[in-house]
Structures are given as C-alpha cells and as structure tokens.
Image 1 (cartoon, one colour):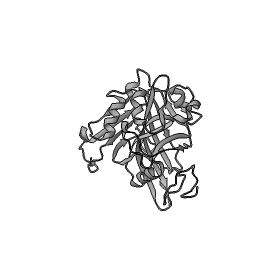
Image 2 (tube, rainbow, N blue to C red; image 1 turned 45 degrees about the horizontal axis):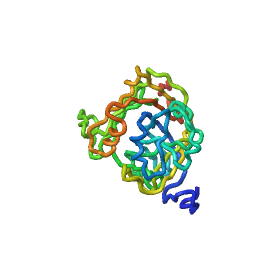
Image 3 (spheres, one colour; image 1 turned 90 degrees about the vertical axis):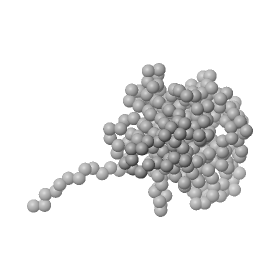
Image 4 (cartoon, rainbow, N blue to C red; image 1 turned 45 degrees about the vertical axis):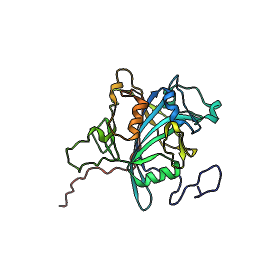
Length: 299
C-alpha cells in the first residue's frame, strides 16, 4: 500500500512504517470470558460500537502475544497483551449474526463485523508501541512481563504461565530469587490445557477495532477520535479449548494489587474470581531446525 495515501477509506500512516506488517513468528494464548454486557457498555460509549451478545452475555478476551518481525536492518522481538471487548459497529447491526460463543471461537463471525475492541494493550517494545498508537490507534503503554510458555525449544514445559507487571516495577537481575510484590502485578495467568481436548479453530482473519488517534480509554466519559478497523491474518489454525466445570480451575487468572487503571478495570469487568469460557492457542511452525552435532573420525 502506498504510504500516506489520500484515499478517504484509509487513515494515513506515517513513515517509516509500511503495511502490511509481516510476523516472522507468533505465539498466542487467548482466553475468553463471559461478561454482563451492561458492564461493557460504558467502555464503548462514543465509539460507535455495541457489545456483541452470545446467548445472553457479552464477552472479553485476554491475549498474550510473543512475536518477532524481520525488518531488513533489525530483528524486532515483542511481547504484548490485548485486553479487548468483543463488539460490532452499531451501523451494521442488521447484519450481525446470532451465534454462540463456541461458534465464534471455532469459526469466527463470517461477516467479520464482530471484532475485538482494544481496551488496554501493555507492550515491552517501544517501536511496536509507536506503530500501534500511530497506525492502529491502540491504547498502548510500556511495561514488562514475566513468562514461561510452551515452545519447541522449551521441552518439558506444557503449561502457560505469565504475569503482566505494573509499569513502575523494575525486574531484578537474572538469577535473582526476588519475587514481585502484589502491588507490582496487574495480573497473573496460569493455563494448564493438558486435561482438555483441542478442536481446530479457523477464525482468521480477525477483526480489530480502535479509536484513532491514540485511542485512550476514558470509560463513561466517552472515547475520543474516530473508529477504525483492521484485519489480522493468521496463517494457520488455532487450537480451541472449552473448559467445563471440572477443568475451569486449570485456567487461573489472579488479579494483582497494582494501582494501574488496567488492573482496576479488569477487576471491575471480570470480578475477583473469573472463569474462562474458552481458550485459543496459536504457535507458528518453525522455519528451520538444526540437529545435534556428531563426532567425525579423521583417521
């Protein structure tokens, strides 16, 4: 796409950015929670969006993304989280399908009107923060994370564990046994999916919504800027999991004691003991592999 296009259908994007942005690798853990839609309405005020209803409830998502991007002169690595509300434009309400949350998780909304409205996007990469704010209007802020997640290069780890820290928290040096205090933590999530059966999920492309420019959350005072949408193409299938009453405890969200607004709004929206309704996992396949070395006799 030509940079700084004057086409009225597209918001301009500043240099040095080019679109689309190609991910070299992506690891994603996305957890869905059912929520009373009335709790979500203030967060969408002034956006032109309404909470999507699945059965008789709305839904929010919490996603950890670890990704890399090759950019010619640099190799970008990034960790970020999206705390989103599933919503749709009011102007397209006549075309919104009735569907269950399970149908949405496994196949997505084929009209692509139901999407994820970004409420908070903590991130640890300054370049990704700048791009997210200026191109996609993301309410993105810089912070740090702690995580240990399944990977081909992390054998033996089969559960997902990660924490999102308060921006004021300084992580200790490697090897330190010092642990963060409750006030240093926005939230911690632990997911053991081994007791659940995975089903394939073909939700791509994923619709994402934000307010441009800068889309900062201002709750019931309304949101500034103009509503924009984008599509996120995932080049592969997700694995979807649906916890039942017995396995709900295997996806454990603990909200911390940080004073950050994200922590406060998470507790307001999700409550103190949220139960996951669904989980979706994506991990891109490796591009190459180098195997173990071996000795060679030279005599």
